[in-house]
Image (tube, rainbow, N blue to C red; front, side, top):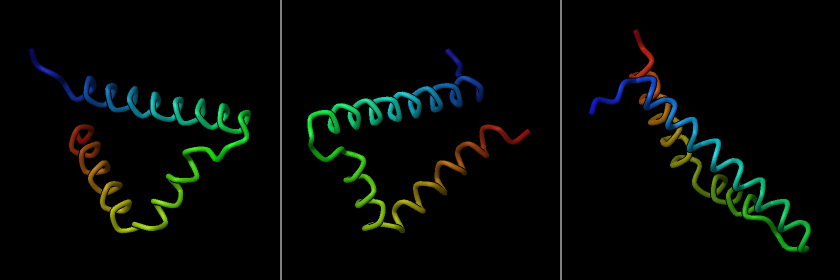
Length: 70
């Protein structure tokens, strides 16, 4: 079984969409229940570790660039 670049990019996009959907769902449930949503923890972690966030963005960019470069 061989996976092409289109398959891997599609998988990454699907997983990112799933994570975003779950974060939005959890936030709406948390606001309804009157508690802090997880996105506040995500924001504070990104602000606490900006170099790690930047490194993750670079790695994701390199993977997508490698897969999509003609």
